[in-house]
Amino acid sequence: MTKRGRRTAIEFLIERSLLACAAGSILITLGIIGVLVFETVEFFREVSIVDFLFDTEWTPLFSEKRFGVLPLVSGTLLTSLIAMMVSLPAGLLTAIYLSEYAGTGLRRVVRPVLEILAGIPTVVYGYFALQFVTPLLQGLSPSLAGFNALSPGIVMGLMILPLVSSLSEDALHNVPNGLREGAYALGSTKMQTALRVVVPAALSGISAATILAVSRAIGETMIVAIAAGQQPRLTLDPRVPVETMTAYIVQVSLGDTPAGTLEYRTIFAVGMLLFIGTFGLNLASTWLRNRFREEYA
Image (cartoon, rainbow, N blue to C red; front, side):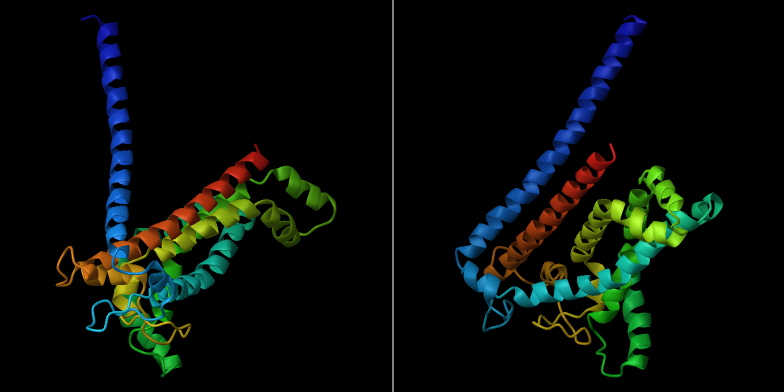
């Protein structure tokens, strides 16, 4: 075989390998969706979808079974809201500083330090919330329960802070310098330019970063499973124990619930609801990012 023939054969193998990898990822995704759909349909053969979506009690593992998912949804949204209240202001301010104020040398140091937060295992964050943050908050608020929504929400906010700051900084950095120079020419200060010109111009990219961070917070498992408790309740009080959708899935998956039972199929119904929610958020984020690219293409 000639040298050109060997090169053609190698390129053919590489191309087919890449195609197989791409097709494999698609097939795995379709398989996951197929299992979710099949088990969810079987679940709703025995449970009314109206009760599932609107009942306010979730006790599928008790003798008196109720299948209202609202307590799990409220726990998930409560911890995610707390996380966003921590990560969004801190991440956006960090992004503005790195993009508009920090020098090149400082940026090279700060960004890797922030990325370290994203590399810490979530189980470490969970025990940090339970063993350190919760006792610290109990010193400020004695009514705070040992398991609560507040401490895992705060720690989740710290965990997703690098995601918000990194994506927001990219959006700010891609704003054309002509807008900054025009603002300076009109007499704006650096802060006025950053807050009134650069941030509004990068709003779609910042919004995409925010939606991705919300999706990450909603799908977080270990932190809430360790520190939030396993008491599904419909509440907005962050001081009491709650249970999120992901924590419930972990609880049943690691328990003694027999496979194929109605109780076991609840994890697929909850997983499908979680999948639909995060999929919708990811679609919204992709739309915003595409719009952002079109504006400055």
